[in-house]
Length: 198
Image 1 (cartoon, one colour):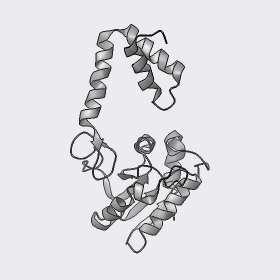
Image 2: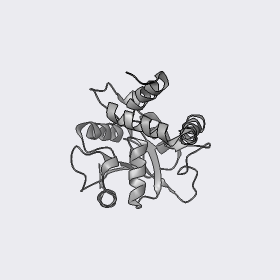
Image 3: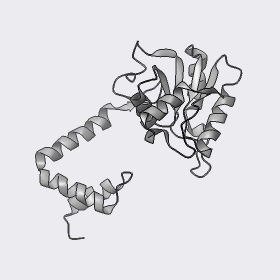
Image 4: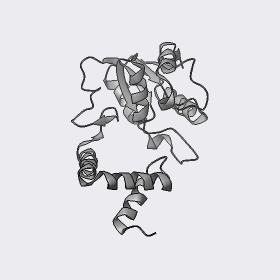
């Protein structure tokens, strides 16, 4: 390539982002270069701040800048209801629906033979401990409507057997094979309201 080495390195790093191919990475890099040093330094600062300050919340697994995330530290959330999701993106999708006022538990993925992700790679043990120790009365398993999401939901239900907790799953409105983070707010809101016991 005829580009300076530093610009080539930036393009290579940008291509590592999901959904960013070579052409998009080139456009991003050229745009940053054209916007000038001030814009690039603002991006560098934002990246550095995230790297230095943002960590997974030790309680739920969502993003936290302090000791706990905004949800776990909020006195306004219903601590008796836990919504179990695959990723932080799913938390954001549920919050957009504006219907859920409980707390979250981010698994960090789903059980997947293809990706070699077993239950031991997920935050299932931490979930069981939270249910035992935090007075949780209902666990809503909001994993994707896919074979992997269903397998994970059934595994969690089994892991919670014997504990005094109701285990539910969103009902209608979530098509098979769809990812929670891409659902519209109304569909997700209706599915959560019409949840059924698992």
